[in-house]
Amino acid sequence: MAVIEVTDLRKRYAELTVLDGVSFSVEEGEIFGVLGPNGTGKTTAVECVEGLRRPDSGTIRVLGLDPVRDARRLREQIGVQLQQTQLPENLKVWEALDLYASFYANPRDWRELLAEWGLGDKRDTRFGKLSGGQRQRLFIALALVGNPRVAFLDELTTGLDPQARRATWELIKQVRASGVTVVLVSHFMDEVEELCDRVAVLNRGRVVALDSPSGLLGGEHRMRFTVKEGDLGGLADVPGVAGVTRTGDRVVVTGRGDFATAVTAYLARHGVLVSDLRIDKRTLDEAFTALTGRSFDDN
Ligand SMILES: Nc1ncnc2c1ncn2[C@@H]1O[C@H](COP(=O)(O)OP(=O)(O)OP(=O)(O)O)[C@@H](O)[C@H]1O
Image (tube, rainbow, N blue to C red; front, top):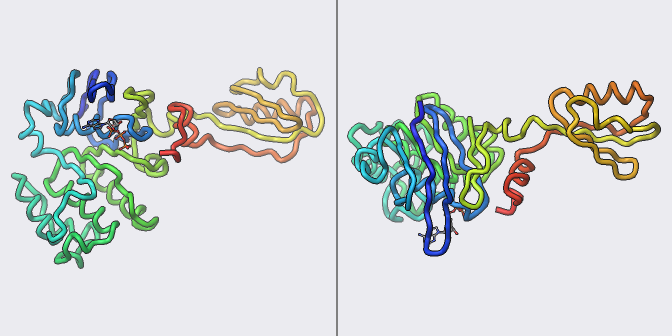
């Protein structure tokens, strides 16, 4: 069942068209990633879905509700991760959780959340005194305190060290396992690959790809080798081979499926002698660059 359905979403700020006909749907219980270069409309799209911004046109349904018309009812059922500066410095950790829990009819026990998110000993610490990582974990706990059916997480692990990131990923998997649908805006490829069931890649206000992380990779791999001796004439026609590039004696063959076995057989059959043979998978960064024309690291 789709818990979020977005159809032909459009939004302009004065002369700037930010969303230019965005459509996607999110299935119940999945972790759905939203990726894209900076300024490409991710936050605008997600905030329209949350009911925080009003689209110019298009249809949005979240749990069957219209985020503008049914804003109150929707707020009861979704959790939104705050951005860095949205809590008073003097507020204590427990006070923040208690306050946010009071907004909901059926909140979780925030003491449990404190323990789950490793903030048990920070209960009485003021927000202003928390480290970046502790703030981040508090924001996630606050997004979950209302017992939401859908959680929106933006920059989930920004500011966390590698160990804390891994721990956070495990907890997010548990959140999914408990039946909560998660929408994740992320700037980290490894995070998307590890967590997301499906990903929408936005570029210039449009969805340019919507697939699983492995689907985005397209199953395409690359084989590299050095030719010592022999003729590569018919290599491009070998089943599964998508392309052959030769620079001097260095050759790169791209292809899908089990093309490497077919290429190796071809080389043996034609007496081609090669060395330094390597096979590598296309990375999600490369897929992203191919889709958006921008490197993910430039973001
Ligand atoms: N309230 C606003 N008024 C005018 N322009 C805005 C407003 N909000 C966003 N923009 C512009 O719209 C574009 C898209 O912004 P948005 O924050 O949705 O992108 P994003 O993909 O989330 O970017 P980032 O990855 O940097 O968070 C940007 O050029 C931004 O400057």
